[in-house]
Each structure stands twice: as C-alpha cells, then as structure tokens.
Length: 375
Image 1 (cartoon, rainbow, N blue to C red):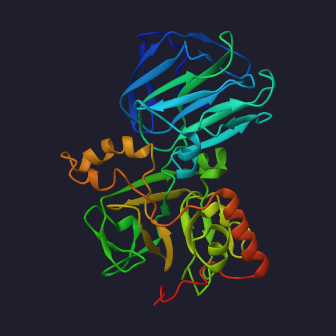
Image 2: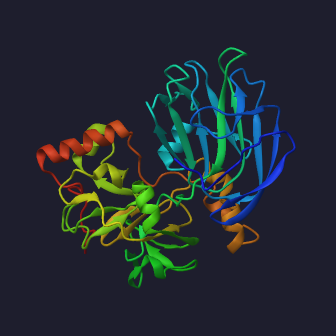
Image 3: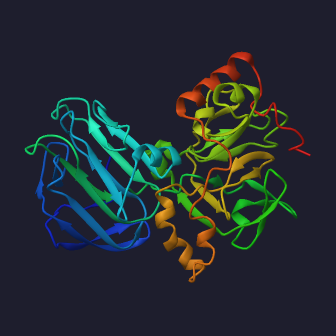
C-alpha cells in the first residue's frame, strides 16, 4: 500500500510537515531510535522489542488517515500503539471500526489477545501489516514489550489518502425524522431524527467524505455494500440501501438470540454479503459518504431499515473532541457521548458468521422478530 505522504527520518527533535486530507499538518518527533530501511520499506523507525527504544510523533492538529506500516518482525516480538497517551487495544479498536488492519505478502502479522501486534514467522518472509486509523489522531507512540534486546522492527508512519469515516450512509439514503424522511446529505447539526424506539434525537454533527473513482480503483474496500429492497425481510429496506462496509445493520431474530444471547444485534454490512440481495456495489462510481453523530449511539431508520448512527469507540472518544470543538467551542455536547456504549450488542465475527450462515441455510429473514418498523 502506498502512502500519500510519509515520514522518512525519525531523529529526536526533528520537525516537518505531512500532506493530509485536511491539509498540511506539522509534526515533531520524540525518539531514541535509528532510521533504517529494508526491502519493501522506505525509511522507518527502528523500534526495539525490549521497549528501550521507542518513537513518538506529535501532530500540530488532528490528522485524518494516519497509518502505520509494520515491517517484518520476529515471532515473539510484541509492539503496542499509544494514541494521545492512551495505549490502544487493537482488538477493541478494530472491532469498533477505529482501526482497519490489512496486510501484504504472506500476511503473518497478528494482533495478540492483549491488543498488540506481532508476527508468526521469520522476519525476512516479506509480510507487512498496515493499521489505518479511521479517526483523527494527534499523537502516536510505538513501543515494544517483548523479545530480546537485540531484536527490532521497522515502522513507517504516514498518511493514507483513502481514509474515510467508517460508519457512513451514501448521500441518497433517506433517514426517518419527526417530519418524515430526509436525505442524509440534507441533515445538519440541530436537526432531529427518529430512532428505532420512536424517540426523537438531535443531530450533534454530520460529516461528508467524497471517495473518487480513482480512489475506488486503488482501494476497492471503499466501495459501499448494497442491500437490495426487501433483502432484510418484511419489505425492508423499502429501497436499496448503500452503506460503508463497516456500517452496522440491525439483525432481529431468534437465530441471533440462540447464538449470542440477544435477539437484536448490530453487525457490519460487509458480513451480510452472501445473503440474497446483498453484495458489494461494484459500479466504481464516485461515492459521497455521510455519518450522523447523535448524543449517544442509536439505531436510526434508513430507507425504512434499522441501522446505527456513528459509534464513538474507545480511541475515537479521546480524539473527537477536536471535531466537536469546531461546532461547539465550549464542548458542552462532548460529555454526552464521550463514554458511548453500543445501542445493541456487537456479536463477535465468529458469531456473526454463524448467524448469517443459519439464516441462509433456513432461508429466514434477518428482521423476523422486528415488528411495526415499516409502518
């Protein structure tokens, strides 16, 4: 994967600029590492596995699309990331959509149960891991916690041009409000939307991200998932619904209850692919994505079907304050969602696969236990 811009010298005290989606941002480095190169890597920070040599990059404003390239490492070496001084559990961040993890080569990098990253193979096998942060980042620190003092790994820190907020509707999606359906592209802060439980909630903010045809050609995972009219059951959605891959859609069924203990659960749209009427949209047309942030995580009605509002995960709750400050300088609304909890349970990937497989096998609709939603 290419970077739009990347740091190529990690000397202590060094300053510079990167070109990011939100313009040129300045950075400064705190480190005691060397800058080195390997095949397949430009110039990365040589962080040691024993935790003695670390690197930290501070940005002068929140950066969108910050990505870390993890080069080949020895089995047993474990590295952790800190965002704004808080150590990130990568399992939690990936599950919430705050981080997208991809690999190239043999793909032998793995996330440990404690939320660090390591490799399961020889360091020269060519595997590289990429951790793309889908929320704004103001500082990143990389440190090792395992392995011999002579072992190290290289980390490139740069900007991924294809970043976009993961939990998004496409522009024509119709959101239910107390005054009828309104296109998501027409909603703005202060407007009201209607949630699945029938309550009216105020929109805290919306955000638009355009994905060009060139960006789609370079990174097909930016393409939306199309859920055809009626594909979820009970005639829902009422018309085709297009959302980003990680946007969670409600499942309400006895199958979900049996597998994970809750009849109503939220699952990423990409995991619905394979169900009749659900697939990745491959038209390669430019896409305008919009997210809706409410006072807390809610299930809203999109083209008649239940789908989530923006979920602020453990990492994004620390950094969204900068975005909120732009519309609310006193941050009066920030405390309302800084400790956001899921509106419905998030099944594990394994549980979701079991739920979808059972629905396909028995030809049962995903919304079989949801009543009166379309009325």
